[in-house]
Amino acid sequence: MDGAAPVSILVVDVGTSGVRAAVVRPDATVEHVHHRQVLPASPAPGLVEFDATVMAEAALEVARRSLAEGGPVEAVGIANQRASTVVWDRATGRPVAPGQGWQDLRTVGACLVLREQGLRFAPNMSATKLLDILDQVDPDRKADLCFGTVDSWIAWVLSEGALHVTDPSNAGTTGLMEPDGRGWDVSVLEALRVSPASMPALVDSTGAFGPATALDGAPPIAGLIGDQQASLVGQGCTRAGLAKATFGTGGMLDVCTGAERPAFSHRGQAGTFPIAAWRREGRISWGMEAIMLSAGSAVEWLRDDLGIIATAEESDAVAASVADTGDVWFVPALLGMGTPVWDFGARGTLLGLTRGSNRAHVVRAVLEGVAHRGADLLEAAEADSGLSIPALRVDGGMSANATFIRALADATARPVEVSPVLEATTLGAAFMAGLAAGTWADEDELAATWAPRKVVEPGAGAGSSRERWLEARSRSLASIPELSGIDF
Picture 1 (tube, helix red, strand yellow):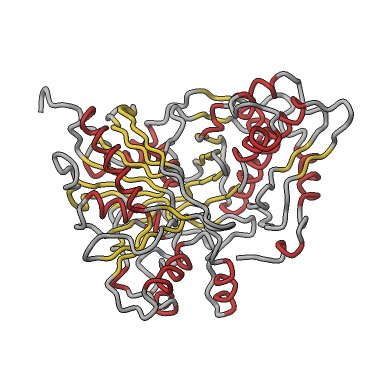
Picture 2 (cartoon, rainbow, N blue to C red):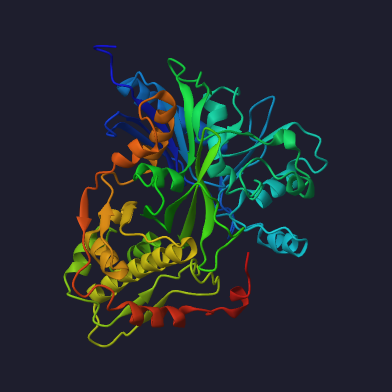
């Protein structure tokens, strides 16, 4: 009606290190952002835990602050770190054990044992995390417990226990969903002795699920989507062949492939994984995901461990102070190699050092090495999907680094389009909720919202260093043969 306030969306975005809330307007501007740090704990090597109660308190705090400043809103969207696992008592709503983060590796042994039984899980999936928690707190499987990924937990908290739901973008990372996304895999639940009653209802990524009664005005929760898929949608990649890469601590490249599920069940020949990107009106839009285990963490290594830069931001200017790497090559395999090789025994490699190599050469080599890994991901996504990716959209902390973005354009030999917001997950969750609220009509309208902050074209010599870097990558493989033999 005339004079009505524009329809706005409140987003709660739960990341690995904190919780952010913001109000998103119909023109896709992000306002009234509030953040609270919620860091995971690592009580022993390989363990990554979090306090789900503290996470819930943080979500309520920042959501209420953003809503008070920027409301009223028409709907609420939730974006979240995927696969992190929470188990809580249905009657009390209290977690029964620390949440297990997606990086937690305590179930590596269980994954290998289950594989011998014909069940294939990776330790970053929720399935064996859930199994571990249940074996600790409910070995006889008699308690009335709820399982959820972080989206389920936050929806439960915001609805004050009325909603126990998840969507396929999150369910697909649990290892518990049917390959076609139609529901939970009952045979897997039986094998792990998980009661179907403990599982959240599988709903669309967009729709009016129920009121967020814990918030003023009780706006409906209308969007649920995992962080990488939210970034994909938030950068307008809602048509087949459009792709984005998020460069944070690690790196993820996601490409939209359309209405048909990728043909491979687990992992493609080029090392990508099929993903449910989002579901609307019962129909899944599919994609593929390529994974880099070390991206921004390589810059953090320069800062925190080598001490050759004072801040991550400084890496841009230091690297730009030299014209090239001086024939120094770096492979960012600090935690092993992901797509396309998947070698957990690979290790970071720094080659070509001479007496003339200085810190600027090393810093530039690190940025260019991460860029080449970005090219690895893009090439793998094209190989497994059969699609041509004409340009790459990017967000994440490293997208603010001009030297890195130039190196990425040159390594991929494609234009790189930089997101107008550093973290596009917030926009993606808003778009999902906004589709249900009528703020945006359909995926085509979402695609039309894309307006990059800048576009960096590849230089004249783009791709010329690719072969040399790939030679360096080959030398990083199987540094620890015992770990190279492990596959999930």
